[in-house]
Image (cartoon, rainbow, N blue to C red; front, side, top):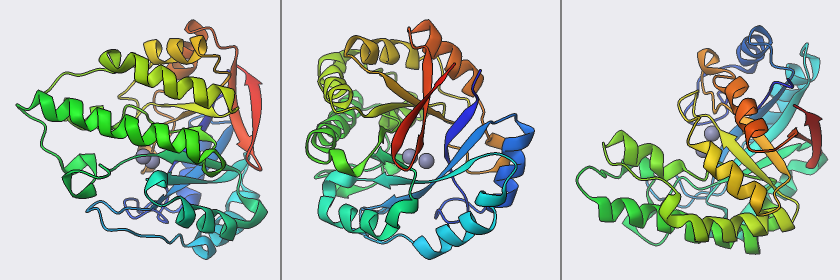
Length: 269
Ligand SMILES: [Zn+2]
Ligand SMILES: [Zn+2]
C-alpha cells in the first residue's frame, strides 16, 4: 500500500500549533511514505470577513529548513478556502507561490451569500433539517462554480462533505444521497478537467460515507483520488488512511494520487 497523507496542517495555519518537524516525525512513525503540508489560506475567515493573504515566507522557510531535509518526501501544498468568493485574489496568492508549490486543495468552509458568509462550523443545525439541506446546497452551488470557472486554482476537490461534519455534530442526519445529481455534475467536471477528488478522513472519523461518493466519482470518469487525514496535531497524522485506501480499491480504483509541481503522480495502491 502506498501510504500518503496529502492533507495536513502546521503552525502556519491559524488553527494549528504544530511545528513541521513534529508533524514529520509523526508521519515517519505512522509509516507515511509521502507527506504534503496543506496550510490554510482562506478568502473568507471563519467569521465571514474577506481575507486575501498567505504567509509564503513563513511556509517556505519551514519547508526549506525541515521539509526538504526530511527522511521522507515532503511536499509544499496549500488548502485554499472559498476560491469562488474571490478568484482574482486566489490567483494573486498562487502567483506569489512561484514554482515551488506542489499541490492545492480547493475547499469550502463557509456559507457564501448566506448566513453572514460564516464557517459552517458556527451554524447550529440541531432541530433544523431545512437549514441542513440549505447548507449542503450552498456548498455544492459554490463548489460547482469553483470546478467550472476556477479550474486553474485547485488540484483536488477537498472534503466535499464538509458541512455534513457539523450537521452530524448537531445530531441531524443527512448524507449526500439526496444531492447525487448535483454532485455527479460536479464530478463530471472534475474528471473531465483532469482534477482529483480528495477522500478526507477527518482524523479517521469519516470513512464508510466515502464509499458511495467514490463510486459516483468512478462512474463520472474520475481517475485521480488523493487521501488526507486533515491532521492539525501529530496525534492525528494519517488516521484512517489505510482504510481509505481499502475503500478506493473496493470502489474500483487501482491508484492513489500524489502531486508534485501541481502535476498528478499516480501510485499503485
Ligand atoms: Zn478544510
Ligand atoms: Zn484542512
